Image 1 (tube, rainbow, N blue to C red):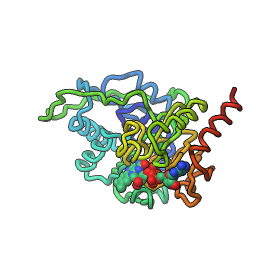
Image 2: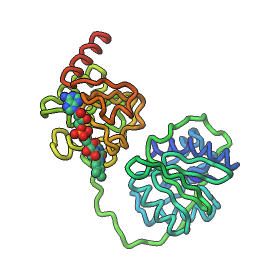
Image 3: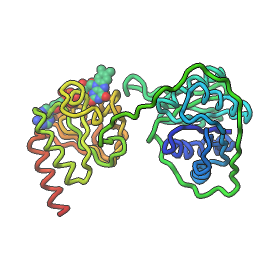
Image 4: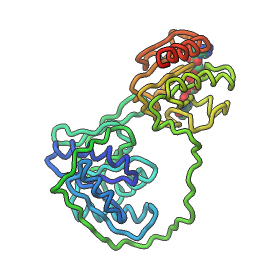
Length: 317
Ligand SMILES: Cc1cc2nc3c(=O)[nH]c(=O)nc-3n(C[C@H](O)[C@H](O)[C@H](O)COP(=O)(O)OP(=O)(O)OC[C@H]3O[C@@H](n4cnc5c(N)ncnc54)[C@H](O)[C@@H]3O)c2cc1C
């Protein structure tokens, strides 16, 4: 059995698609896990590829890692699931590591690919800031893998009429930790992670006010989303950290990513390499960014951006 869990619905739908492919290759079934009472979610997971859904009933209102680990541990032991896919967000990573400790299982965090080769589960993940890919194979079971958002696409496979929703209740220990308060992060109105078009600014911009050149292009492209490299957000503070893209910033996957005045250091590339089409504007023909770009414009961004904005305007108006 391939068991899938995430506390993030969107991520769960992405994982279910991949789980279906793995299950087919392993000759197994996909079971989605819902922790808490949520029948609508269970039905949706059946539509997105789960063969069955296990609903673990609990009165806990918020995610608590100790209890959730025990719920999953008990589910895995009872069902005999051998391959466990967990959504790689903050909660998922902690859950997966604790689970691996309890089950004495192998665990690979943040993979960007997972497949079956010679009947064994193999994972790939980016290491050394994107300079290498570690290919790892599981030699024991259960095997636990965490997958970040946007690595795989969700696939609505249609309702699964034979799929069952099985309800379970487990007695778990009362752990000493308590959640005192949950504070929503203040993210403003910028959401680079979900943007379809991003115009991104780097150190090639000389002044904060010049960022309006990127905003004007984003506006005519109907993207309206501005991204940036680390120095613009972290050192110069010309844009808030919501815009910061890269290894230590946000990971993005827009259809179009325009990098203006960005050199293309590996830590920046790590956050935007999955973009559909990458356009780079840089006055240095040797800039690294051109190696990752689909289209490169060698030129001064102060000349290129207004020309691009005018050209898009002309085409679209
Ligand atoms: C642990 C670690 C984590 C990091 N995480 C991140 C991260 O998440 N995101 C990130 O972005 N960086 C990150 N960095 C920093 C990263 O290594 C680079 O320093 C940074 O990405 C460089 O930003 P930049 O390309 O804007 O600036 P620069 O490297 O200074 O490049 C500016 C570019 O602009 C070009 N240019 C200058 N003037 C013009 C002009 N008028 N027209 C056109 N082009 C022009 C130049 O040719 C140059 O290529 C990290 C570093 C470390 C060590």
